[in-house]
Length: 426
Image (cartoon, rainbow, N blue to C red):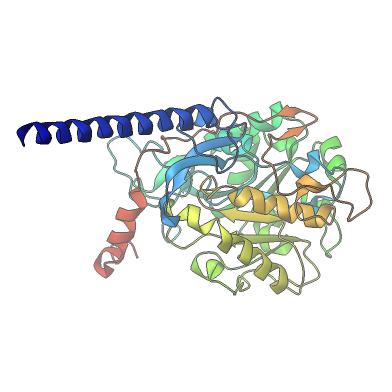
């Protein structure tokens, strides 16, 4: 009986050993057969960003139950590199909401910052990744003009980020290096210093790229072509939220030229795309640009990948119908890099494909072909951005590692849920 028991134990141990070897061998097969070294495409499993192809990074989306890392798109297709020479208002561009409000941006010395964050990488990297519109909140602060995410028109040391000229210097460097690119800046304007913005942009070296207000269409007609804008070096569009500055400083009043939906929670409510109260009505015929806001009132990093999945595509269709079949020219979002795969970049490809060539994605467009002549592709393929001035492809950089669990906005939201804390600021 003892011998039988020993033999049975030995057989069980042998079987367990075989099973272990089989599982180990299977793991090696999976590792061997999986993509790596830059060959992985969108939604392919990955262990590091170097596994993913150009313009992709390795991340996840726990908000949708996708906890294992996979390749996510992180760069836009520049539409003018596919179909060029059209009026500026015939294209759709990516805009970052509060472009300067970056996770881990250093605070003032000895100060603990207390505000929300909306992006995860530098403005320089945003531009390299295909962002072509920047939303910047500008305030008088410390004897200068600062970028600040604040309350009631006043910048505090715990809501301040950096002098605005620092960020504008990044824009100037990008435009100087890329002479065929056009950038739009939309200012939430709390600057009261006389001619403050004029001096700021001149000191940043951006006045030489300025698109003059006198040349902006005011009756709903087409804008100049991108070719004409580049030739004239009118490659910087600047809009302010203060109407009087159009006459005082020659800075275009935002809602004279842009239609816009409501920002914050009203702008992400399914099935609804309300007109922003400052904006002209959607049926106005005097504005030929449409800014679509798509970000919640309280930004949360780990929810952004969910927001940038199916709900975003649905909201684009809703706003398109609400604006009388007018496709958004600017799509403004928080945490633009976060998605469940293609995210805002695939949606932009779809918008530009439909408006430029009548195809469901810009990847199917063919330069010089009749409208509606689409290449036979099964789905959009991620590709690096290319144009006449070179490629912006390369690693997608964050201020911090995407694997790091870091959500400072959760604390701010929790604190703001208490009325007595809100009363300290209002």
